[in-house]
Length: 178
Length: 287
Image (cartoon, rainbow over all chains, first blue to last red; front, side, top):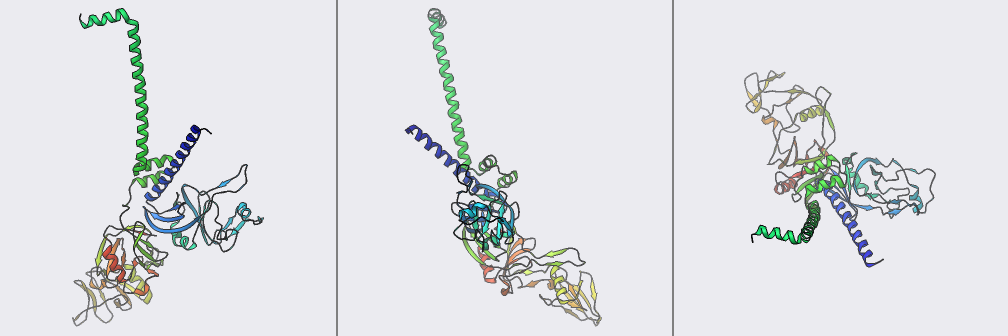
């Protein structure tokens, strides 16, 4: 690669980084200005705030699932945390049977069961967003019960925190990832 | 030689060169104009980018396009919000705790009692009162020391049902004839009992010790002393509107529980501290 090409590549990368940073700042700005109750998830800081009009109603520590290529190349499928605005689709409790993706078992070296509908797989309380992203709590059993493992593309919060804010998490409540 | 003759002579002897020079000048002017337009366009884009970064309104406009924000969210964002530097109160009904915050800094926090979530069917059935602390954004509208509580109707309905007695409303200008021959009526701002002999006695009423006549609990008219309880709301009250408030209590053991009729109840020492710290107009977020 010539010096000119290197320079052009650096410039393009810087432009992409700048664009991403701007997008994140815009998402953060939108969450602050949202007049209704909303969740604001800072991926880098691993925090989740319940907020309204920029007032922080509750700050919660969370664990962000890592980015993963869950199927090997070629045609590998990348699972990442969302960016931007999503919304609450539903809140479920410990009786909810979640269809655990097969790659969750594979990643942990577990045999993939025939029936992957696991009641309580997302803990005693979980929030499912409109794009399928899960904000869940550590379950007592099941493939997500290992505290060291955080679901790629998901967010793990403390059950106590989710319980405390549950009444506010009606379908349609915005969730901002930034 | 006159100037016009000089010009005519110039074109007459070297006309081709002259046209060439003029054409070159026009081409240079056009190139300069294009360059100027390009630079102006770059400057405009730079300024727009700066506005996007520095101005909230333009951020919202940018969001509309770049992040596909919904029209409703954009409208809400454009409507403006409370100042980010203003302190605010947060109440968690789930944890029954209150925080007074500025930004992310907690200035004060304490336990509270919140709405019980119970309901009470109104007289005649059908509708019911729901004793929940309202969620959302409220505002401190006014502050009071030594607040007086004028019990709402639900208090008398609740008391009557607890004591398994009937309910009778006493209005100004009306009276209740008692079985012993006396008459219960309103004199000024007092409820009095007039005996058959003409003696008049002011009746007392406190929380849990309301006036009962012949097995019926009397609902005093608003404005009478018998419908004004001192001390029930503690030492201070911050009014939030629609009958809701942050206030003290004469029952500190209730703090930390979901037992109120919708107000947020604090220990007297805590509400006194909050009263001193919180200005009228403070936002109160209840979740």
